[in-house]
Image 1 (spheres, rainbow, N blue to C red):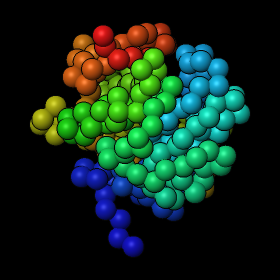
Image 2: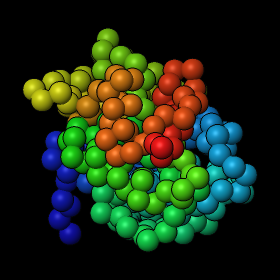
Image 3: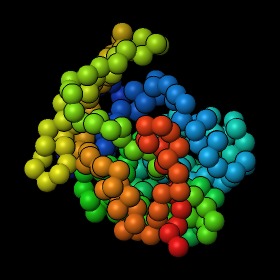
Image 4: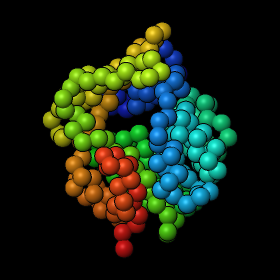
Length: 230
């Protein structure tokens, strides 16, 4: 079956690749880090979570272990096939309309930095559409100056290397980012479009859809809790 890649996105390496250039096998290998603890500390115990762009369930599974109810959404069936224990929905985030409200809607993986402004607006509108009146949206942002001082690399304690090789301007405010993931037995690459957002630009993007920042959850402001603006 021919894969319809999103414009400006591609990926290489062993196994299936999703429309945004993510390799399923690669993401099955990547560690989750501190993100589940950040989420758990920011939301009510046992909350119903709508996870947008769940991938292989790297965050889904730890959240389930912490007692949350998770509805996991992804546009890749190959990704969803790796998710265990959660309700799964095959859909693009932009088109999702479950007719349900959740305590928490989670938009991680830097999705808020979508290169296409209209896609970003659609992602955030989906968050609002599924948000309970007293619920919250958890958003993961890129770090400050994430697109500068390149190339850079990080060697993970588990033995693989991540390189952000380049971020070339597309001329409209977005960048084409090229990343490499090198393991002892395989290498994957991903090219994707990302739009840098300052703190003010990010907050303005939320305001466009009726959201406002409640709290920056981490010192580097990469994790944010937002709610409906009054």
